Image (cartoon, rainbow, N blue to C red):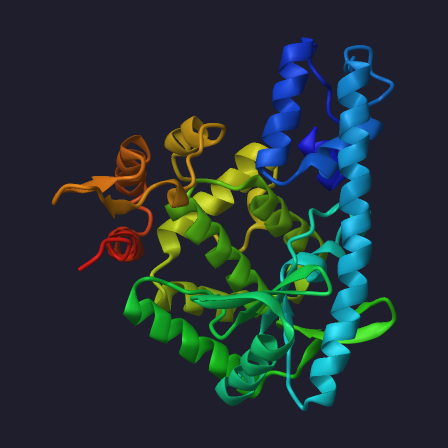
Length: 354
């Protein structure tokens, strides 16, 4: 159904009980693809076995309507916010979310993610942060500054992706700096306004990193994987794959990139020729498939101090899940997965009084 909804492919739906359809809806919500699956339902509605309980169908239609309304609101607020930042002599760059949605056949079905703004220059980023502190609501500076503006969540990014390995983080920062210095700006149009976004090659690197970070922390997230697939189908011919391969090598991402490409092949029927960033054979995805519908977000656990002198965990099963999860993916990105686990421990220990 997801292949049908996201990639406009003809798929044969198998017979399912009402309970299974309910589970499909729940998984779709968990993975941020509810509206895309609904699109698949619409495209397959003439099939005999597509028999969804009326109450669930009504709930699904309400979810899709809410997603469309949220996208319309986000588009309006993006144009307002970027116009305002332009008058402040800033250079905001739109990341993911609405910037990605325009590549879909039906942009309003892309699950809204708020507004993510990247500032490639530190001085401008600090100025934007100060404006957010003065004008935003519920401002929170936990790594990336997040706040509410016009009832929309906005996040400021001073780094394209925050990697836990300091060497990789510095390497990525130098890659981004050089790309902005040497490449011409890339724009998209939202509601008639030109908005800057990342170059196609840097966008693909960003998407590979986003999939990798989520994989290491929480497992595969289908909406990120679908975004990657749609981007490759619509914009893949504009990517400099020689440059991308050099970036992948510098960040030592080869194995985890192979895994991501294999998931596109096995889940969404991509061909090997559609994935030029893959430099070897397919990876074993058995462990990933086992976790696909049994994810436990990493934020469910942290250390805390009880009434006694001992340290406890808020959710011990989630903690051990995180340790096992990191061990599973160690071979795909060892330098990042190790530091990522240590960073999680350090963050959790910050909940303990000295």
